[in-house]
Structure formats: C-alpha cells, structure tokens
Length: 285
Image 1 (cartoon, rainbow, N blue to C red):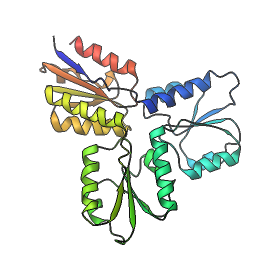
Image 2 (cartoon, one colour; image 1 turned 120 degrees about the horizontal axis):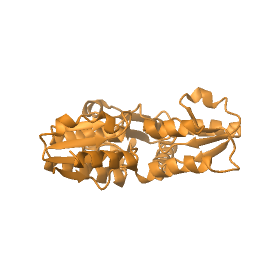
Image 3 (cartoon, one colour; image 1 turned 135 degrees about the vertical axis):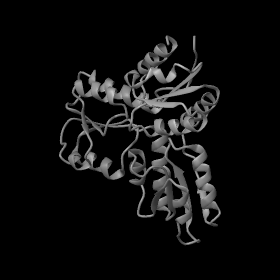
C-alpha cells in the first residue's frame, strides 16, 4: 500500500467557508429579498459556483451590470470589492450582505488610511486578481501594484514620500519578503504590513514540507484559484512529480503507479468532499 500524506490545512479557509455558508444561508432564508446575486463567483471553484447557480444564485462579473440591479440581495464575496462598487450598491438601495474576509477588510482600512494621509501605497500581488482590484479600489492615485523582482527594481518616486506596503492575502511569503527587501534598499521611508493571512502562510509551509518527503504531490483546486496556483509552484520546487487537478476526474493515476509515497494538499476554495474523494482513490491504488 502506498503512503499517503494529506495536509491538515487542505481545503476551505475561514474566509471562504464564511462566504460560502453565507450564500447557502441566504438561500434558506424564507424572508430573503430575491433574486440573490454575488459580485463575481463566490469562490474560485466551478463545482460550488455551478451548484449555487442551480439554486438560483446569479453571478455578476461585470461591474457595469451592478448599476442595473435595483432590487434583490447582493452578496460580496470573500475577495472584497472596491469602494466604488460598494457605494454604487448602497445608492441602488439593494440589500448588501458583506462576506468580505475580515483579513481582506483589514487591508482596505490600511490602504484607505494611508492614502488619506498622503502616503504612497504598494500592493504586492496579482493586479488582475479580484482581491487586489478591490484593495486598490480603497485607495487613490498613489496606489501601485507589483509582483515581480523586476517591477520592484523599477519603481521610482520621490525619496521624501512615505510608503506603506501591503500584500494580497494569498501571496507567496518568501516572494513578498524578497520584494520588500528590494524596495527597502532604495531608501524610502517604508511601513511594511505583512497582510498575508496565517492560513495561507501555514498552508504554504505545510505543502512545502510534505512535497519534500514524497515521490509525487497532488495539488487540488480551481484553475482560477490564485492560492492554489501558488501551492502548485511551491510544491513543484520541492517535488518534480507535482500534479495540479480540480477534481478526481483530472487525475491520471498512471503517473502515480511508481510512487511509493504521495502527498495531497488543496487550495482554500476546495470543498472537503473533493479532497476526501481524491484521498480515498489514491489510497486504493
């Protein structure tokens, strides 16, 4: 029998579970104001999103379409939204259910305060990710984003400016540390706030440790999940035979036949039942 190591931190994080439970809770509320919308998919997991859609939840991906919503309930996902979107929904008079992760909300407050005080704000993360877009939307023109060492090397603004640095909650901690080091060497007056959530940091550390010990590593998560992609990158650094799957259907078990030990981890948007299904299947190989 093969040795299978499952990461204890695999699966829904606090913020994601809270957001998903929130949507199902609203669906069960007999006094709910219908229809129910979510600002973008509630999580980056197609199975969960399709299940909610089958129950009548409508996903709004286009910010412009939000202006047309005059009735019903709009649920803000764990990634959060920009102040502009929040204000627009309030103006429309719809019911707002804010399921923004508390750790993300904390970043919004940091960015808003820093920009109000005239500071430059650097958000380290993927500028196209919904969380980062939302974070930037709570600041002004002085907010910039970066995610690579080259971008960090190329930033250039007045040495007299005060700079606050925050991070996407799911960013790779080692990369964040390196980028901060590059910026610090430029001599700016910086205030570094490590906003990578503990769940992300713990998940990445555990994944790395398991990947070091096994012949093959399986990373489970949605293809659009930023934190799952980072887990895959981390595991791949330690274990060449690392495979990224969304569900058991994507797993080619022939690739695992020669492996005596197999590790499994999963992103923050991966439901428990999918993880258990993969784990059971691998144990039976």
